[in-house]
Image (cartoon, rainbow, N blue to C red; front, side, top):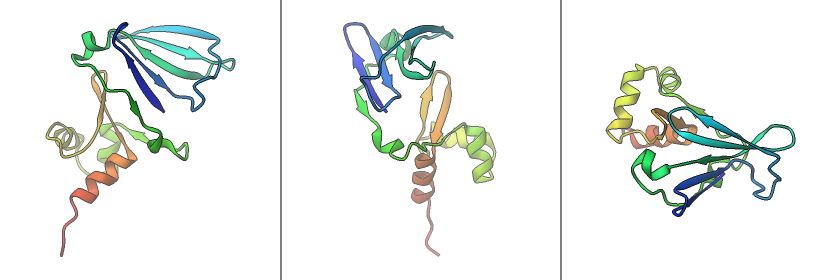
Length: 131
């Protein structure tokens, strides 16, 4: 996965397909308080997402990032705070508190947090105790 940002158009583009040259057959507009476009291939699979008005919506300009290391095996697992709470056997409010306090790494997409399996592993490793 790779994300780029274009200052001129104030849009970020997330490449979900490893092959950035995959042909886009159609683009659909998604409006959910934030303007998104999704690019689809010939099988209607989403190959990329464009986030319009990024700075206006999120209040900052993102760095272009390359996150291939997260899905090297095409098995990136992404969880909600409720799902992480079940895994860690704590309350979901506790998970959200850890995220807000910077104790647990997470991504914010719209108004919701998403936590990867790597985020959970990093959190657990940072909180190891020596007995």
